[in-house]
Amino acid sequence: MEWFTAPEYWMSRLVLQKALAVIYLVAFLGAALQFRALTGERGMLPVPRFVARVPFRQAPSVFHLHYSDRFFAAWAWTGCAVSVALIAGLDGQLPLWGGMLLWLVPWVLYLSIVNVGQTWYSFGWESLLLETGFLAVFLGNDEVAPPVVVLFLLRWILFRVEFGAGLIKMRGDECWRKLTCLYHHHETQPMPGPLSWFFHHLPKPLHRVEVAANHFTQLVVPVLLFTPQPVATAAAALMILTQLWLILSGNFSWLNWITIVLALSALELPGTAPDVPAAPLWYKVVVFAVAALLVTLSYHPVRNMISRRQVMNRSFDPLHLVNTYGAFGSVSRVRYEVVVEGTADAGPHEDSDWREYEFKGKPGDPRHWPRQFAPYHLRLDWMMWFAALSPAYAGSWFGALVERLLENDRDTLRLLRRSPFPLDAPPRYVRARLFRYRYTTWQELRETGACWERTYVREFLPPTRLDSVAHKS
Image (cartoon, rainbow, N blue to C red; front, side, top):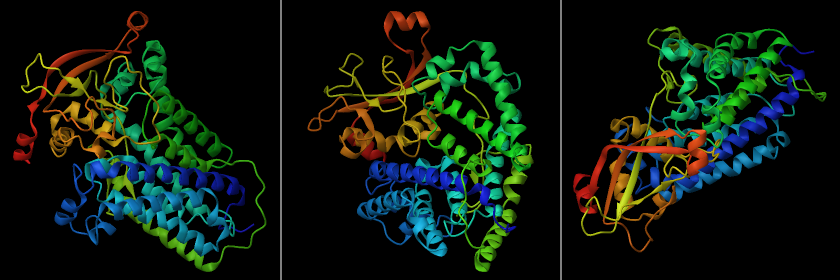
């Protein structure tokens, strides 16, 4: 048996590659369907404006060379097509070098999108997809067994994802150390799912057990990924079960799904590997060169991970080759939501006919039960959650959102669940108000049918007309 490869991971590699290609497809599909309103030529944060002030070396992207909405759409849909080809197994029909080049294509395509995505693409799972996708280039295809070095580098990513998240919890909010964070988390998380209400109402002792189990999975189990089998498989399986629990409890885009993909690198799945020749010398040289590069670049995330001032979700190079991760270092005790309303009345009075815009994922109408969207990423809905935490998160784009609503911009309205105004009759004024939301009790749910109860807090944005927004911009 050749020392460079691990034939026993043949099936694990196959499932890992298919699953990663599906996540690529979801990411490109989201980019294709949402970009015009977010980063298009008339978007809230236009790409042309960004590339005019940020040099290529800081954010490498094809869109520094050329940008138009049509070109971006073609770029994103090309990513969808390549992802489908990878799901169908086209990489396995090509020579080894051809399969590697095919896996390189979605990485290059998505890197160009992320690097000009600005606030809308500032989430940790964007870098996680790029870091994982880059390593997938070197996993090989049907001409060679999975290389051990690449499998261990994938586990190294998983270790940093989980261990980093565990450390930042222990260093952050005291409720993690007191095992009480889940008293609040399911209610205050960015985008609740259809089962989140029920998770919130689990007995508090069970919440404490959940937190303790989370600490064990994130601070102890990751070390076992680098132990011999079957211990590594058991560790990976436990991580996968934990991620499935998180998937049931909320909408976290593809964060949980790609963590499961990474765990497959340590999982020995049953299946007979075909007889394949030894890996060619050039392939070994390339793999070891890439491994040396990534190990060297790992200095910065390791230094961050052991630092008392650990930060979450940061890239240390413009190619997102090695990054640091983490989530929920602090947990909100109270949920706030920004409710956006419009009126067609001539004057913006309190007794005017104010009609509420409904978003697809974020809480709005107290009777509207949350839906499952993950792994699809509703970028505007996520940023609305941040806006409710602090207006500073909305400073760069919220005014543009209001302007597009006052114009009844079709691309922006497609990001919403429902607009209360017909396309040919836009509102005269739009305002935003801050509400406090809480889950209803079992009794309240039976009596009212509402899963949320909300209370007005304060004005977030006063009634605004189109000419006043245009003047400010």
